[in-house]
Length: 296
Image 1: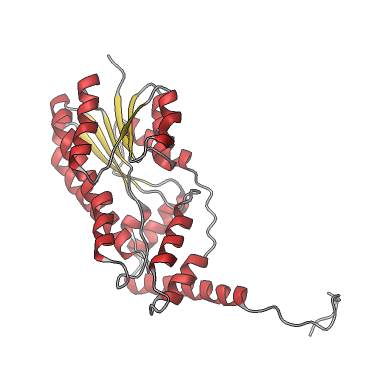
Image 2: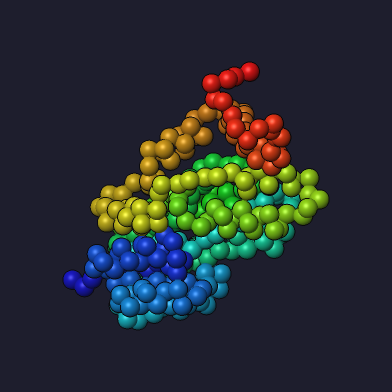
């Protein structure tokens, strides 16, 4: 039997790049696609097939799938990893930006699914991994369009799973939580830049952008999770990395919406208080020395 074939989108950095390396090291024939080729030269040096890919362009998607079929004759795994998060108040986000988020996170992924399904049905085998987020089952202020795209991706994945299971095809949702990548900073910087100074949501945006979130999970951890899902005979429908991610999803799903709202608002108020404290000028002191044994 020939080596299995995996197609991975968004492979120029982060989780997609890590997944391409993980699958290649395990003996898969990997086709890695991204909008920019230069960041993938490292992958090419390892024997991975790299291709320029814009998931919002149906012709680009078709060329990506066709190349794998022409060279290998089969497709065993599709990992829809390409995606991005554009944060901001729903009132402030331009319609074109909201649409682009759905074009990348939802319609691009589903177009690739449509392109690989005939081959997977003929093989009576295949695994489709859609990289979502724990945000696909929750919500927060300033993330409306991003979360909406992930909710849509998960709903489509659930429907697809029931449609194709009789053809031997598994549809799996990967739900990363906070990950130690540049995603958070890039999203925060873009949100600050895109939010007008006189926006009624400006203070909320500044509060969110000031939140210091330190995550232990790495792109390699998520890549390992993807590999586990792709190589399990009877995979779960959803994979989260840590017990903390699982607990958060369960809490959001089980608690009342009012309770989730209250907790979210509390977190934001605490962040706002911390921001105000950090922005306040240093209080004047009478002496440069202090006596820690004295209290008032």
